[in-house]
Length: 266
Image (cartoon, rainbow, N blue to C red):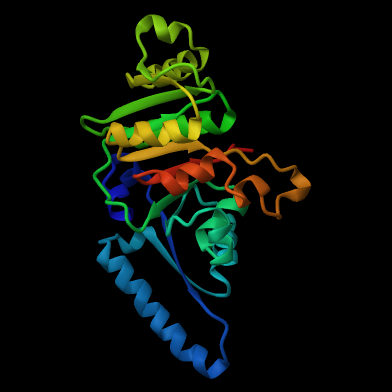
């Protein structure tokens, strides 16, 4: 995924990477060897992805990966966290001590999750699920940033109405006028020189978003994942995500493509 992202013109102009490796707790004697091995692993990773060393900060930390990811992201004021994911469902991921699930719950940063069985393609077709929320608006801005100077790049805007009586359809000009959420998103994209393809659908947002992403052969699916916890509870798990009840949790597990989850900017 990192190899694919760094080919995007927008990323190339502003790329600054923090590659982090985590070392478990061990005795002082054992740690000496582990630090040496860790340095080699980081160097090999940077070389294998063909990264410019001047754009990379290699970070070697001792501790629990779940905690270290969140700590480093905050320390470096990261714009995006990229993580692999086994795509474990609901409580299964908690019981399996999933790092990505933990970070997904507690980090305030946008996250790009890539499941082990996903084939990574060159990014040309981006889908953004819009719903009028601040998180979705932030997601749209990220998509417009990524699309800059991509030849043949396409932006697909999808709005799902929670109405089980209808069917999906390509939004016609008259249909767009009746959907204020799409109207606002289209206006923002057009302002930045992008003419999006729009789809409106009715039904369960979780299943519809995954279905449309697969049908349209999307390279990257993007949606807002707002944090609804009060400020006092930011350091605790989100029960909706813990139990798999949130839309973003369902999509991250079931989508057939990489998923970027954007958070509301404070």
